[in-house]
Length: 323
Length: 291
Image (cartoon, rainbow over all chains, first blue to last red):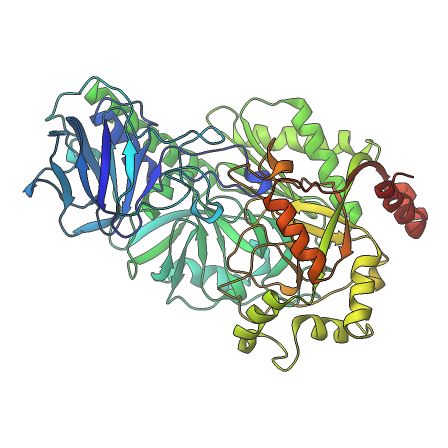
């Protein structure tokens, strides 16, 4: 069983739940940016939640199947079509041998997850099939798909078509998008007033938004508490002695445009971070388009853990509904 | 040195050993992260030492954040009594200083530099009061460097110059980062040197290039067949200045799978280093030549 790539889309990569364990040498976890949608797509086609799928950004690929398969597309509202006939999102459907899976225009969200029964069978590298393009590691030859690529699919009994995730369980960012953030790290470097305006302002997703990180603009610049630069940090008030960056951490170079690091994060660097987006809301970032109005919402650790539990419950409910 | 602990969301604890860089701060972080690794605490998923800080990633479903914090703070006391001696290795890294490729890249991004009329190496030599390019190369390659962090991108080492603070080379980063840096560029920002493991964006000054790959995801490079990244925190590096002919020859030998870096085991003691920097460096560098 194989899938031939006729058109690759804009930036389509193979992803699973990621490659933890190598961040200390600069290799980020990678994996789907919206892992809840990724897991749901797999469960719909009868795979383990963490099987390898395609993550398509903004524009879907065009794929030819060499054998019958059950397919599901979740995440962004990126309408799938089989030989030109539109299929429902978040619902398992059948693609027969020789048929073409293509996509209509993106209606909502940013990333679609395309799961195929059996999962994509690219080599496992350091415990994962995810693509880390910056390091040319994992996935399909360490890169995004190109026309002419042929993807192997693992063996599987075909799951039934027609199963669906109910709309109430399809998590997506609101308008404006709200990202819950736990202040910390180098929060003390900005003034009290800057700490206030940061949460008050509505930011907008900048065009520089990818798997490494999402940049935001249009909020008021942050002022810094004056200091003598520590040895080795650099002279800009936003500089620190190069340190590790948590996933989801919010760095603000020169106090102007916040950047939230995501699954292909640079593992460290010399800019101060003012806090970290909670783990539960990382999925939402993966569905933000450029220019989306976004607010950061201050939370406590208790609220962060509650958000994590709520997300877990959503995934468990999806799994139970498809079991 | 006051240790500062902070949660990075619900999955990370960030620990700053010191606001400023020093080998003492690095060793403090290394001792605590070693103790933490040995403790094998359930729920700890990543332990990442950095220059003067470190980070722990944990699964809050397996260990509550407050409990994780409590255990980590307890490590600090244990680690303080740990001897600051390291069984490590010294690696000789050939560098073609002032090479044509980083020079060309530097020229393409000149308007992002503090001093568009100079090259990165001329500029850094001048602001560090070194005698031109030759004086710079002598200062840069004369003493060993300590790998105090690996990261940013896969396998990229940050290196700290093992000399008195007033002799350390310092330079600002570019005013705005470049969108391109040649692979294997030897760079510098703040007090840190680095080797860019992959081609890509970067803000460090560019001084030269090494013919020696340090990251190979396909593991075809002879000395990267066991693991795709060469460096780990605690390694010591000695730069070896080379010219164009040796650069070309080494690239060909690497491609043919015949080249091996010169690597020797050494012990490094922070106490010894504090007492006698030049003596420690001489001993460490001699190890490369079989003494």
